[in-house]
Image (tube, rainbow over all chains, first blue to last red; front, side, top):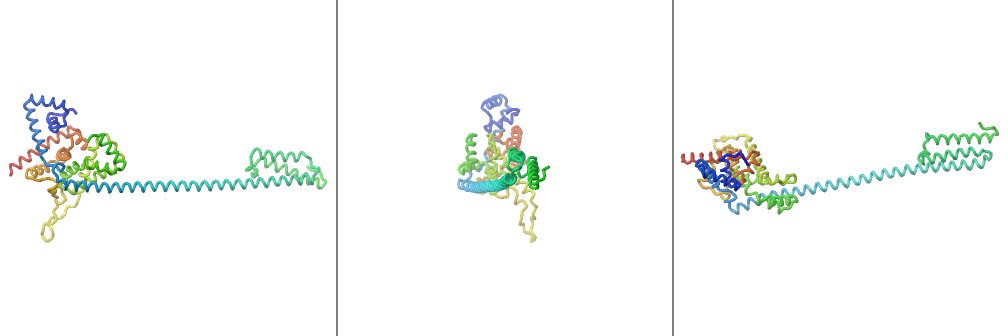
Length: 204
Length: 193
């Protein structure tokens, strides 16, 4: 606290807010200078006049005080109850929202898992049908075309093995796959050779 | 009340402890009410404004960072509420003083501070006190506010400076000037009587 003039310092002193060291310095100054002493006394009398005004906290009837205090507290307790109610409502809403989020997340997971399972089942079924066709073809070829050169079967078997190894089950359904194309070409050659053999004409 | 005790009390209030709120109200309501009573001269309005001050604290306490300035914060809220109420009252339309049949019914000054008497059980009234309070009412708003906060709010000048957001030198200068004017107004009243 600095840059205070004499009047301001005196006011702080008479109101009891000046530190002990500063108060001692002020008293020394006031004792030395009569004008300062006069100013100090003037301020003290004015401050005492202000202090003589009765205050509610000092003079009010205790019953009146209790009445006012109860009234104020009642309002605050009502506000606190309302605040707690709102907090509970907010927590409950948050909980409901979280539960709904979890439930909808689980439902979405179930739908996705079901979809994946269905796709996989379809792929497996297609693969099985292909294996069945291959097996049937091999049986028929071996049984009805004994003169078919082994190299043609070997080519077909090799293409099927390559198809399985490189692209898995899902790839067997893709007609645009290069291995699938080569397998179909190989099968076509076998079929042509078989037809030629049946009619007695040489294959191309 | 020291800063540590206030910190403990505010922590209880933040937890929603009703006893802590009661302690907070008990610690401050009389000073707040004493100030509001003199600033508005209306006991019911003063009670409502003090209650509203505490309700603001209920709302804002979560965000309040206590740095030893709680009292100043509390009084600043009340001072602003009183000022806002004064503005609202001042904006009200002026009513007719005289009714159609000539009887004086509605006084336009009915809503002004000072018109609702303070009940005798709240503060004693004697002639000297009434004269001094009348003189106090004649001071400018800023001068009066400093004296009311110092005496009825029982606030140190440094806290008043925080409440009014101005340097302590300004507050002391206003208080000094206001007390001088108060003395002068009292002397004028004495001469007239």
